[in-house]
Length: 247
Image 1 (cartoon, rainbow, N blue to C red):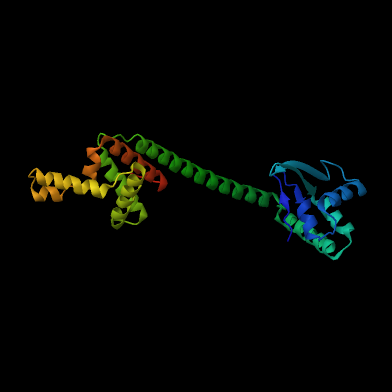
Image 2: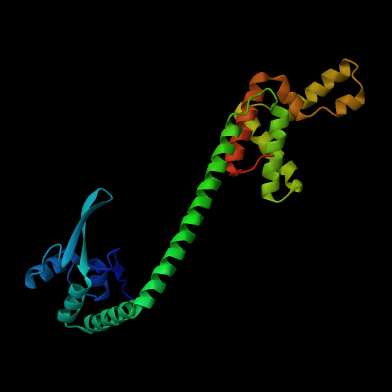
């Protein structure tokens, strides 16, 4: 049914456009509300409150009716829905009255409950602020990551992302994602570069065991520009996955 709104002072209002829709009036809203205002001498800022706003760049006025005014308009509409809505407003008023304290003890209890709820909300907000500050601080540390100890720091970030995704089994997937983004951004085929590096090492007589341990990280490390791009890629991944803890 039609919502009834209440401000901080306890005054109740109904949106005239919503009332118009519920009563299924044949006349367009703008003409209908102006007719109600003129015909029943409704007083602006007492019986109704016009609020101007823009929708898609076009001006639009919303009318907020005092509950008594909405009840009167429903009654004089003189159709089935108008009568139904008027009875509904009467029931709403009854429910609001039942919620009001009847004795000083009830008032004190309601006040105490209100204070407890307020404290709960404040504590929740403080927790959210603390968590947000922690994330911001952590993001600052990630953004400050430079290329001096990049291999160790990037390993920490990728491990943290994998842990957030579900565990260490995610590490290979996350690492491959970082390589894929790097390859696309830098226009570099890491697989071919790795193969070329291994062939070059073999021609130089480097032991096979050493060659087999060469990784794409070594390829990235050989190219300063590639290293800078890769560090930037991993930073972006940390932000993408909303990392709040890097250990």
